[in-house]
Image (cartoon, rainbow, N blue to C red; front, side, top):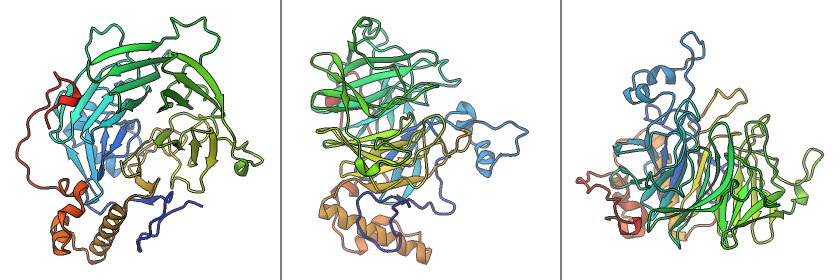
Length: 440
């Protein structure tokens, strides 16, 4: 059974999934896959995505497909979505953000991360047809102004080659981004590159072409995940079009030594069954969330099955644990992110093995216990929206309701400035300087 939260009463429970309910008539993103999301304290941002176009004679056209045919932005980029959407956990509404500047045109199987709770960083990806045009550019969007700009140099000879399906992680302490693997659509890689957010220069830390005669390096792959822990990069899953790699042995790249090692993980004895060995099944197109010393793995496919399982890996002892919770829907090519307070968001993805059906559902779960203030404000929002749904009173803005309840802004600092208000024009993003010196 799936662990789900009773939507009527507020009860905090970690590792319990809740499906966000979209109101009738609300503008929401179209079902998609291959997109990427990031999370701030109160918002989820989604960029890009893919939806296959049905043949004109197909009987499978939905109301959603017919609505898309009147969307000029979709008509210009289909079957890809050149869109930036924001979901607010305060208002529980999606809004499509304006695109300013130069947003990246590679809109599927890119990577994304968040810097300073304000800058969306997008790297790599592919246009359509997949692999025909791929990217090695790093673009940044100021989420306050929605201004995009590319911050990498086309003549940087240490930059990774153009690919998609790479894995990316960020070291916010040293202001470095790490990129590993990917595919051109024909060849796969396991190279490791580091981008310096201060100098805007790439450094190649490992190249399979250069280090080909080494005894140990992992299989090249795409649609895997990497996490940074104690100056080492842990590669979680991934594969090719024909195979998926084991999760019992974890490839680990030592950044200081610039060497690969393989670490045997420990199985979950409680998860051993006739069909399982206590490890997550091999997979690609999954997602991993890194919090403290733990990696959470959810969803994915092994090219035959789609997974809805939920696992945790303790990086200190390399112990796998299968959690009792499951994603409410089996997914792959979905995207997940976690807020600074530990709220997991899972959005979109492919939901059947014929690769056709996608979803625009948003699931959420807490991966750790937030502060009491955060929990209390979450409870207040829960009852506000419950009462609005019961009374059908969706006219009064959320900020007015909070004011009527006499909840001062200083008790909700992470949220108050994100409640939609009329804002004056903001300055454009200046990426000629390092991200740490960008205008506020």
